[in-house]
Image (cartoon, rainbow, N blue to C red; front, side, top):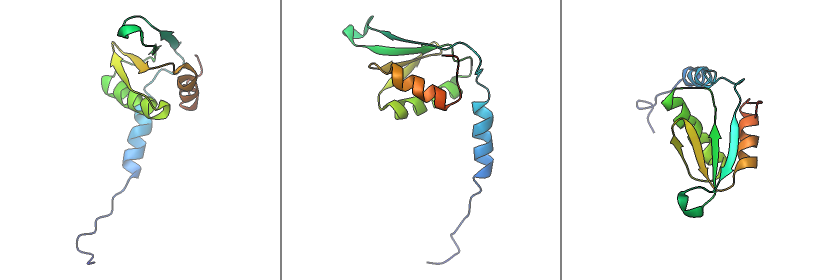
Length: 103
């Protein structure tokens, strides 16, 4: 294989951008995690509210991370995260790993 087409990428730039994005969350805000059965045809959902940011893109990235961690589906409605199923304990564990302590 020739070296003509080989391109090296510097990932340090991207990592610094990701850490800058994570710091925009207000980690001192009170986060509410609750389990509900309203609507959704009686299915249980876990509602996470009060993350302390207005940035939609940041919330969508955070939603993707928590969905992968919990192994479930979810959506973002009115700056609140809704996860399918009873994921209260897993979401608390994930939020503590991410540095949120006011749960």
